[in-house]
Length: 374
Image (cartoon, rainbow, N blue to C red; front, side, top):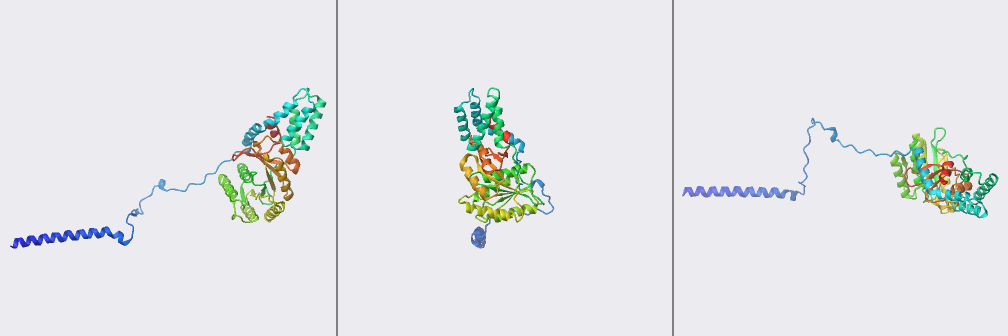
């Protein structure tokens, strides 16, 4: 009887022990749900302070990469080749007409039509034809090289003696201030970015002012141009006061001692009065810090006579000192160079011949004429 009693007591003890273990395990499994705390994220143990960390395991943030713009010399070679391909038809057409055995009235009329179609303008066309008639009549068409005669007269017409230097330097310790104006769609903001690249390639320090505050896309576009060549861009709130942004940009450039500040302006042309007020205010406010040394008017070469109308309006509003002709490769109307210079009395200083970042170069009359003649 005693043995059975000990056996029963042993079984009960084992059963109680197993039951207690099962309850404990169950409670442990339920603890995360009851407490609401995550248990699947485990912090790694801290490394001892005396254990060295390899330098190659330290990740530094990547520095922004900047591009190296082309030099002026290299871009001139490429742009001349592009211009020759785009404008060669105009020059070859004139040469074919002047090389005829007999220059009759029909031929001269065809020469006039070719020049007018190329947007040279009525007065310059008549002037050029009269000079060609005189030279080829006096010397005799057979005794002279029509190509050389045409080249000389075209160079004279384009104006080789005009001062085409960009006024990018200031006086008395101030930076040069370049104000860029023009209608939206002419490539104005892009021209500002490309001009910055030219100056950076010449080791100039530059600050850009995004004063076209009415177009958020223009501000972002200019910021991208600045990042690509490591140039600071001063910007303001969308729809803010353009004059305020321009002032801040010039003041920033003045305080930092940079060489040039380039200010992009709004290109709205709803009416001359509004344009005059806006650009006039921008210029007045800028000159509280430093004088404006250059006012560049950006024109789309493909717009022809419409471009001349725009040029007149801007010339009446602000003192334009130079012209930038963009998209000159998109049309065989290179004569716009002559027409716009005659219209405004100021030189073409820069030409754009493509969409690449370095497709902007100083305008050279002789190289331009050589390209026209192929």
